[in-house]
Length: 280
Ligand SMILES: Nc1ncnc2c1ncn2[C@@H]1O[C@H](COP(=O)(O)OP(=O)(O)OP(=O)(O)O)[C@@H](O)[C@H]1O
Ligand SMILES: [Mg+2]
Image 1 (cartoon, helix red, strand yellow):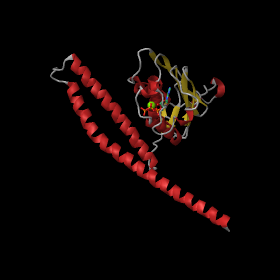
Image 2 (spheres, helix red, strand yellow):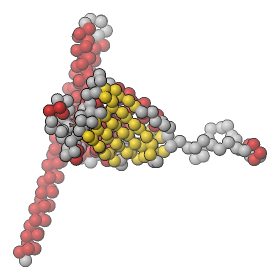
Image 3 (cartoon, helix red, strand yellow):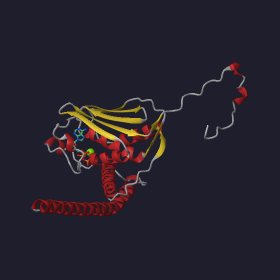
């Protein structure tokens, strides 16, 4: 009988702990959302003022002043992005992170991704290369979330690479789309690999710490990839480089080119130049 009572106590205690954990997690999410929101409002106002200053219609800014204002503007935007991302995490955790899926032509998605990674800070000794891909076909996904995923991975690759290249491959694989971001940077120690996707987790070494950030990027990436129904994995060799691979569902290649009708088939009257009905 004592054994049963013991089991019951343990089960009860577990339930209680679970409830406490849920409560704590809800509180944390609420806190994160509120803070992000409160931070965003004044920051947007600051960005507005910096913009006005930068536009400088009277042309009164000196070269140095203009440079300072541009830095101010760039940093505030970075901060805003971070806050937006934190807000997203908060929404996810309360279960209402919306995934808005729509078909996007692959070439349009790629063009948008390239633009969104253009201004990322990097060392002058690092080249960012987008490998040519067959950019035909359509991806049915949440393009904003895909953009955030790729931007975070490229931003990390650039941040943790002092010289060499950061390469982005995008390749259809059957009905999936593969994104691969490879760098020739500092790499990640094997024992750290499993924890880099945790919230606020950064590899605790001097060279990492120097590079800034709060350790939210990969947590968000992982959440987004999960929501999009994809997978992410990473391979890394310290001192040599790192490669992240994201596989997302929703790719459809272009339909094969229409078969040219045979001249003798006698069915040429079928060729209709009017716009095709959508079901054809
Ligand atoms: N390409 C990479 N090369 C080496 N280390 C990496 C790379 N990507 C991530 N890491 C390690 O994983 C940690 C977590 O990455 P994550 O993107 O979550 O945080 P962060 O970049 O430090 O900060 P944030 O993204 O919030 O600005 C990093 O701090 C770094 O130690
Ligand atoms: Mg990051």
